[in-house]
Image (tube, rainbow, N blue to C red; front, side, top):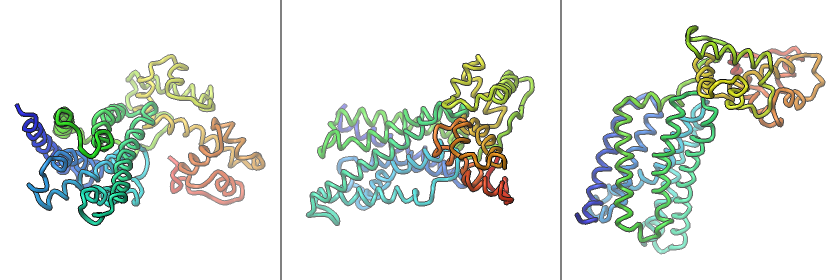
Amino acid sequence: MDLALTDLMLRAAVFALAAAGAVAFALRARDNAVARDAAVIVGGLGAFAVASAPGVYGALGPAAFLFEAWCLATPAFVWLLAMRLFRDGPEPALWRHAAPLALVLVTMPGDYGRFELGLLAGHPRLSGGLLLAGRAAAMGFVLAACWLALARWRSDLVEERRRVRAAFVATLGLAFLAMASSEMVFGRQGAPLGVLVAAHCALLAVAFAAVVFAAAGGLAKLSLGQAAPPAPARLALVADDAPEAALARRIVEAMEARTLWKREGLGIGGLARELGAQEYRVRRAINRHLGHRNFNEFLHGYRLEAAAGRLADPAQARLPVLSIALDCGYGSIGPFNRAFKARYGVTPTQYRNMRTGGGAIDETAAGRR
């Protein structure tokens, strides 16, 4: 079969599957920002297959501009989705939602300007610079998304979300990184037809996986990063007869009696070695029986509670905050201040002044869990 015809058929198949996946996610996106981002991203695969096809502007006319804009904006949506999925915390700041539009506004004029079209016709250097900046920004968004997926993979206690992290990087991350960098690799003339056929086969597999994921109810996994974390407790057993329940008790006893939380650099692997238990079982016990989604959150709970108690003690009012931070397992004052304020809503110094100066602080309003 002719390679050009094969490429065209593959593009059509990618578009059809991507559209089906986008619709499947969009139907569940009424009150779910994760599903909305997923719909845009999966649809972006199809938009890329259309916008990069030869002769698309002659065939579709002005509608081709919409496909290109969608394609250009998608890497920023990959970044937004990663923030929602892999960070336990508030929604991304409002200004971050302008990133997709900014990416389009930077890249599209440069893309057309190099062909003597649009607002930048007759300005080849400016067009080339904007296009390069847009492509670099797109790669930056995708790399940042992959970093968010991998950075806290080890400390993530939610088993389903750990699997989503790996799948995210292996599919969406690599696919969009390849699309964003293709022009830098092959230049203005584009990739050879044989490479395009192989690339569209890979995109077809990604689009098919997205459809299967949506049909299998994978949205519940995608929503993990968006759901509010449960209120953690020192020891809240879900099932007394489960093997991890006994392990959860051992974890609490070791953390409190041996003050393991004071050890700088303590990780999930180190705790597992201390207990002589398998790492995945320790992770599961902390998540399912102690109500924590992230090991660092679990560890900081002990450290910050101890620090808050010492800051509220009038007998230690003259002790430097840095000394308390170091005694509680922090290597420097910066991470301690950020973690303390995130938990209590005030800085350590403000907390001390409120406690020792006769002031009061609303623990619930301050975010103490």
